[in-house]
Amino acid sequence: MYLDLSAEKIIAAERANKKIAVEIKSFLGVSAISEFHTALGQFINYRYALLDFAPDRVLYLAVSVNVYDDFFSQSFIQSVIQRSQVNLLIYDDEIEEIVEWRNEMTTASACGN
Image (cartoon, rainbow, N blue to C red; front, side):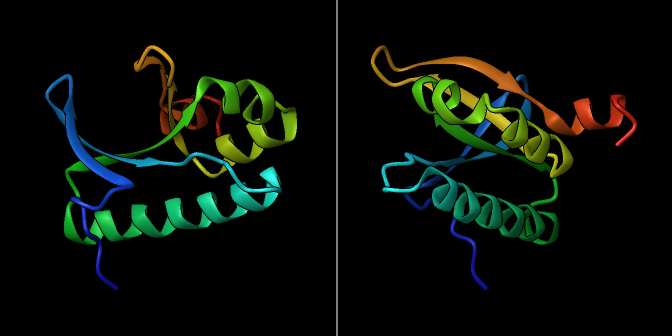
């Protein structure tokens, strides 16, 4: 398996002097849950690849604020995100600005998961 950190949907960056990688998902398909299953599987694979090839990077899944409000705010999806320790980057695509960073690895640890 080859992980290309310069690929269109994976962006390598820095946040507060920490190296991160960001997987951007648009959720434009017909089924949000199907898109979520794909995104979650890819996120987990990318996280494991980063552990092997770039262990100093923390992976984030980026979704628009609209997708977050319409889909990711559902209690079941929130539970899966927390249990799977998916870090989220929520952005406003209209003003091209990051709205929120959610580090679920810290949240899950704090919740005892």
